Image 1: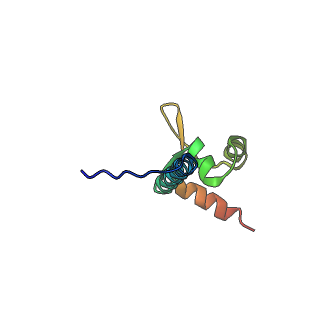
Image 2 (image 1 turned 120 degrees about the horizontal axis):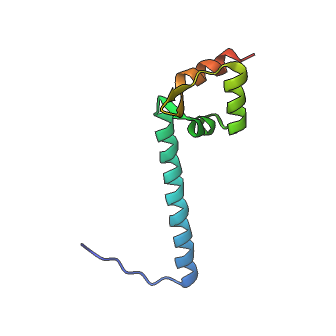
Image 3 (image 1 turned 90 degrees about the vertical axis):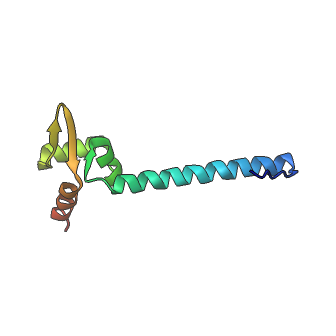
Length: 92
């Protein structure tokens, strides 16, 4: 494997470190979004993230508007399709 060696000022080296960290964080965030969008079912936290709403708002929609929830072994899930339908039904 070839090695590359550069003489950089400490300021430039620090700027490059910051740039690489920021880029890596952006790639990770984008991958997380893509993973979330590829799911058919969300846990409640993921559903809130996908809709950009709080847990309290989601809880209210579940109780007040009968938003369908799947309960399995004490865990709750909501289908993406149910969320889309729910949002479409509340369009004005």
